[in-house]
Length: 256
Length: 347
Image (cartoon, rainbow over all chains, first blue to last red; front, top):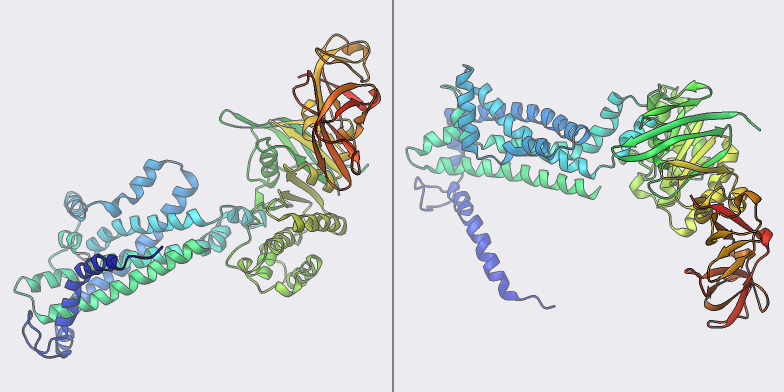
């Protein structure tokens, strides 16, 4: 059948709709002048200015600490949760509850977490954001590892036991390696979600040590500068890379 | 005869309402090739998994070398299982897969290498030691799975539908290979299969299972010639089965007549089923039952003729040597010697 060429028109418009704002952002970040909405020459001055900004640097460090910690926690918990769910229960409800934090509206999770922290009189700071991010991170990792598990032949573990490996040795030598692509994909996903998460971080942050999205928000309140554009472009590059790697790994998952 | 290696006594296992195994008792002898044969859902795989340790019976006992096997966890049993899916570890190469079991025994590295090389030579895959499982053909994967199991030198090797995933030609080849290997390594083999030809050609003895019960345990020839009940008679090979009342001189079938068979005095007056193998049925012009040829299938060495006999709901099958002179629609007569038929109870 001949493909209708005119279908490229709406497709192209849709992509334009999706990526035009981002394209504008990236282009403007290389603006030479101090005009956030009009391109006046080309330069990387704003990137230099960005790196000189102490608030931004500290925000970046905070974000990386939170993201690394939340990723570590959610990778371990999410993997164990996925394996446990697959192995020890057939309950669809438990399954659904495990991944629900991934699809709950952020604002719900944010209010809930803040209410909880207040109720137990938990101090707020990087650690409270880290735990909050681990909540949805765990759900994402569990969901990704669960998908991977469905593709792994269950008799591999039995074969390992049969050949004389203890349950623990089987988990380390057979279960983990065969889940590795899923675990790595889940971790990357949790990391990239954490570094640009705003709503939950905003609710659960303390007086000091704001994460980068919060820093950006407070900068934007006094108007958008090309500096912000540069920062957003960098964040975009990082997120994009991570999502691509995660996607690549989960495709690998299906092919095995 | 050699003494039993495995004793299974009164083993039962239920899954909810389903009785996977009902009071199963059987013995597997040292060094024999034993087959568990039955249709899917007969409980044969459950029994295999009980022997491997992945399933536990609700009641009954299993001993190996007179020691309780059920108390031993799967990783400490001198029993190895070749999985139906082969279950090769995808992240390890062939040599690593085979060495896995030996490494778990913490054997010296040199001995492991030696034994892996030896078993690779036995199965004829020496050149493929560095390949990953996904770079192997179905037949090669099967050999690796087999090697991985026998390199442990188990007391008992279990094989779950070992040939089912192979195409026909490779299957025939592997069938011979399995038999040769079993002789060579002298390990007791237990194979689970739903394919009666496979069981009959591989095994020294076959246990026929149906609905969780053992129907008959016998060598292939007696299993074929003297089936213990109707199920076995129907399941093993082709058979003509006709139901009727036992009379003094044969089986009386209403609307057909009296069919020749040996009549035990105790059976007279009861309902029973007559079984006669197609190769015992003669086609001719005299005697027996009148019928019309409905189908002729030529197999090369033999020809199978299906004959419609008035009064019987299934056509009678006759296997004759070579080609046959009868054609579709011909009138013919069907006959057999009373001694070639047998009577089976209807329960």
